[in-house]
Length: 92
Image 1: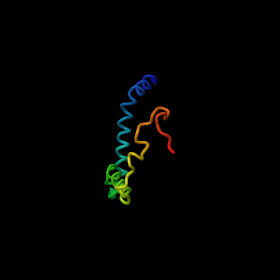
Image 2 (image 1 turned 135 degrees about the horizontal axis):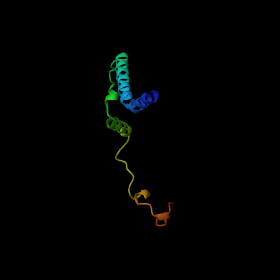
Image 3 (image 1 turned 90 degrees about the vertical axis):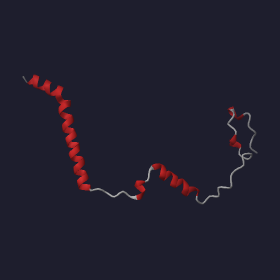
Image 4 (image 1 turned 120 degrees about the vertical axis):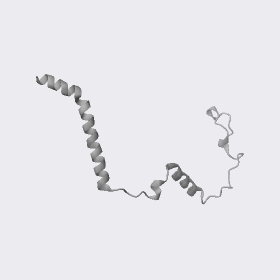
């Protein structure tokens, strides 16, 4: 008789375990929310990642003079790299 009971418990375990785990998780979630309260989000947390990235980039270029750029004639890395650098002039 016990083997029939254990076989039934094994076959029905997922149907019993999931609702129990769901209720425990739901109660725990609401209990934690009740104990911690609802924190006020800071201004930094309200910004998205792309907004924070744009702000960081603006701060980085704030002190630079953007009119001074390297000439393409002076820039050796403008041309794609040739195989084994055979066709590039040597830097001197």
